[in-house]
Length: 629
Ligand SMILES: Nc1ncnc2c1ncn2[C@@H]1O[C@H](COP(=O)(O)OP(=O)(O)OP(=O)(O)O)[C@@H](O)[C@H]1O
Figure (cartoon, rainbow, N blue to C red):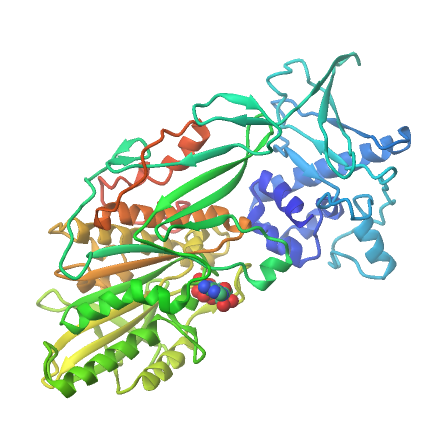
């Protein structure tokens, strides 16, 4: 049932408020009829547009409920007929195409009316939406349960094309037989009350060539495929580089899928991400066609490495940061980014759960110390005989730098006369063992700017940069490793948020992620100009984008179906970086033109705007753009 409420909200574009609804005790679509406008603010619905959408949705649910009550006495067997208004195309009522007022449809669930939960709560003296301003009136119990039917209705914002005369009333009938839906019928009723008959709606499967065929299978399957030299049907802005360097690629892009958390499992969320063959990942996106049939759209992406939920931090480390550490020990510079939505596992990857489960920070430190000690003992390495390890840890929040090792002291980044960016006053701590380095990191982590999000109780709102510097006895830099735990990528969308602080945070994150992509691009293409001044993040990482630097991006994704949109955004962003980033000449799947216009739209959204002919634009506050993925 929770997914049902979610679906309703999604249909009117309010799904981002779903966590607030559930937190306030609204778990069923039917509970929407209890809302008054006074409740909207407590649900986080502030903008006029969103309030109007919610208002119309509530009115729709109320009108359905009234009609359901009217019809309640009119039938006596296992068939329930729900008569609903069908809105004309000119109606301002938003499309709400499929409302399931019967919970999750499981046969074992007692069949009750919309308000059954509310009624039972009320009996226990608990209101499911305990706001003093709700103005909720006790509702008569609406029991549609006779004969154990599935109660469903379909409401369309516009009349179906196949039935151009259907303007006023649609009657939708659902049968239930042995706990299985057998078929649905739509009955069209003219204004004069006559019907044009009924038609069964068998499931249809759409083939890749765009044709349809009838089948009992419940889904459509489209597969997103690309190939070398193609960019979802568009020419690449630059040919995929096949350049490889000694010791590995210069830029590598990996994806890590985390498992469903305990809470997600308990809420019945579905895993819609599949990791394949170590280098590809498939997202199964639930979609609804214009004829209201449900189908699954598959998106397949290829990367240098894909880590499934069974992969440990050590597995990830060995294929991502470990090669970079070797480069750093040889005097180079390297950067490892953790990118992804809030709660996707960035911090889990970088920090782990010390001391039991170490993350990339600790694993990298362990290798640095081990190798420094062994080479210094043997004296047979390119590593200078006396190398010291220094660590600094700071964050970028709303475009400002804060030293996490110095009580969040404000810092300023400036370029010196040699165009080297220096962070004045940044505290660097000399560490001599893995444990001392971990202590420093844990201290700094506690200082990070965090907040509560719907997904993660400690959501990071800043970029955290941990830099491990190697210096010789003359204080000359002999290698530098940077780890960047980026702020939740979905927060870039907060640049639309009515709250000023969220809007500022979102705009800054949006801007820095756009700039980051551009800088990695320029590193790959060996452009003479690196647009690192576009954001504070890229400014302080300037030396990571020039010279012989190496970069690894780990895109973290959540498997939950509720996060599908963000997961796709993350994968598109990473896909774009990889496409530009050499990719080591990895073979890509054969191209299959997308059969569906809808799918074309979906796929090309990740590329058309990101072909990268122009440098990124500065993002103004209030910009509604998300970082182009
Ligand atoms: N690979 C994994 N295996 C098991 N649990 C994981 C994994 N990755 C993440 N988690 C769990 O998922 C939750 C969210 O992870 P985490 O805090 O790392 O997300 P995040 O991307 O850093 O979020 P934010 O941007 O808000 O800081 C945590 O409870 C974490 O333990």
